[in-house]
Image 1 (cartoon, rainbow, N blue to C red):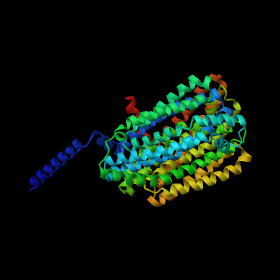
Image 2 (cartoon, helix red, strand yellow):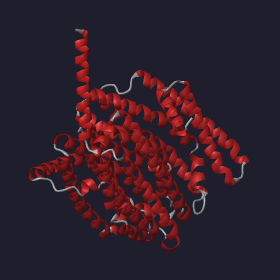
Image 3 (cartoon, rainbow, N blue to C red):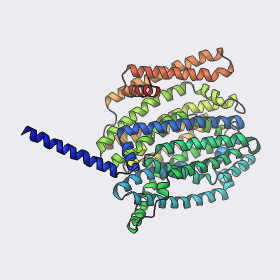
Image 4 (cartoon, rainbow, N blue to C red):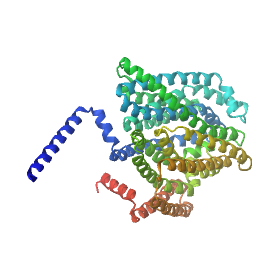
Length: 553
């Protein structure tokens, strides 16, 4: 009897293996890749790909900003450029974020319910409608350039207005390229095709650096505008080539076309509140530039340079991890598996915060040396360094809030809850504007940064509590205790790095300042990492094991 049961179990096992093998053979290479990347182990691999691509891009972005500071400084020229860049940046962060988010959500839902042909047709139809809308926005920007500059920067003089208006006309087509890149990146992310998404910013920065270096003497800040246009055109073409299987897919059948139109209408309804939330969030930035235009020359530039210094940790955290985990969050939300979604979100948040704490603490402790090492040369003087460093100190609190906020916001969108982010962004915007107006006169440009920090931290707390009420406890007591210990370790490492820099910097020649700074940061990293390994933190040991495998130890 036992042998008969054993034989039957063996036969069933063999049949199951045969059925699974047939299913794997029936799947296309694209479907096999998507299934592999959607597995838990694939998330870490995807995050690593995005991390390396974004890190390389941000390093090149650092070089780009250094060139800006060296060639043009932090005065009238760059103030005019940053005001002219307001409208394209606004379109990217509002419509671009909405297009990228909707592309991921709708692709998973359409693929699950209607098939790949309908999902591809819906994306193409939505893209054509978006292109028409953006074209009208570009025409409006070019035809009303001077009025827009006077509205955005009422404190500018006649020369600054003329300079900014000319740049506004040159940058008018940039919005199409920025939003198109976001939409195509969202499409490729939904298909787990991360290498193309990670490589595009690298290609764009290389192009922009080359154009600015070659033509800054003859064209001035116009070289930046023309470089942005050329670089984004190349990046858009690269992403379109990677997404050609969707963009050039055969036209669907009549029934699929009707389903695609219905999906497009659903996407537009989903996109409206996302765009609204992002638009509301941009009003605070526009208000800061509005107020800073009436302050000392270089105030607008100080806000920009301070925020750009956060690009490296942003590449590691804000861009890579939320983007890598977002398809998995959408898949779990589409399957209505809230328990698995809560566990996965908790793991992602824990890993994000363990990386965020040392980055924020070390940058705060070394904010003035960081600005001095990166920017203080050429046209960028010591006064600009002091202003930018003081703004950076407050912006670091904004960075601390925005990293988990990005994760929470995408979770709300995956759950088809677009109301909560809109309400939170609206309240944050009004609070930010009110605090900016109140603090601008007594504190100057530093008050604008402090107002943004207070508003974003309150937004973080409210978003976390609302999401916790919906999904249940995201972080248990043991994780909170771990994060408390990690915070203490990060502070200790940051203080050690600051002491190291200010002890050795006066003893070394000026050209050695970057070496002293890098050594101090490395000291903080080693102290923090070693302490996490001593505490037996899983993420630290997993990172250690991966590093050893990469080095062949």
